[in-house]
Length: 430
Image 1: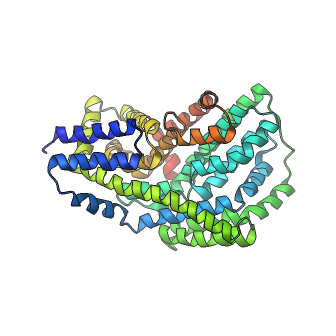
Image 2: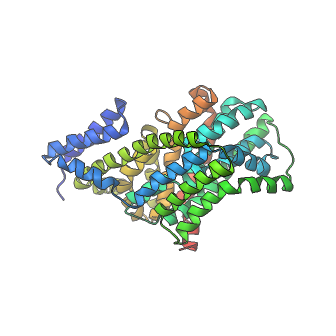
Image 3: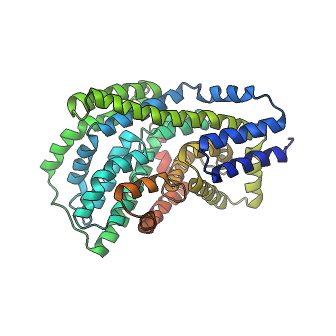
């Protein structure tokens, strides 16, 4: 295997320099790839070929539909319904509004699939509500941003579709199933942390649990929750593909938002679709430019080099698994989620498989690692959004989030070393 060390150095160093100069990730990936190709004397037509190849995928068509569904449902009055449902479930507990925040994020994550959308939508309602009831503003913001990561694990998640494509076309349906238990485990872990803090600070309880109120609110919210059932049951049951289910979910979300909940009118639909186009353009540009970067990594044998380097440090599978998580956590501090999935998957997945980690299990680990990265400076997008929505200085939010980082790390370690957590449902319904 011929290794061109200079080309690898040019590719990686130019990329890091561009990131440090605050270039957009998509442009940093593209420019560093072009410089590398020029050094190797390869024709620049390769750039166009790889960009088209990167987005020329039937399964990838599900990503725009899922994003569109999330935008429509998020703007259609769904947030208030899900908050009320969560309140009827867990509002009676000590620190009730913190528990409501966490459970509502689990529900809403199944619709939006986006931590940023969760924070912006639920946070704008729940953070002021929590502060008014006597919760500290930094604690309220910390609960909101950490619980938003549940939406990355709970299907349907467009990031799972991106990972499935990057991993060589593994089953999207199996990934969807794999996310439910880890998402619930993350929610329980955050609720335990919130309960301990709430007890210590004497945060208030909500009203007593009422089964009648729960049934009533469930009846109101069932239309929103049905979108998740349509997608997951349809894909897992083999009724239709992920792309077809996403398209059906978009039509369903339009009907629910406009005619049932009446949270959107025709003008609101067009405004929401404009927001979708903005988001989609960013995602698709990232995918297409990352395809060039991936081509350079593959032709330069970087995945093999990385695997040999890590195995050269240790052959202990526990240490290798911890090292993989550490690499992903560090990447999460400097890069956004989609580029990490697109760039790191071809490199790290073979290493994970070499120590017995299933691609589906690794996908869940990767997504949670990226979720933690969204909450860490200097490039924590959700951290910045939460700080802005809660009107709290970022330094205070980070300090308040420290106990919740610990909760998330515990869940990450359980997902790494107890594969049954991720694999139980995929194996059960295989």
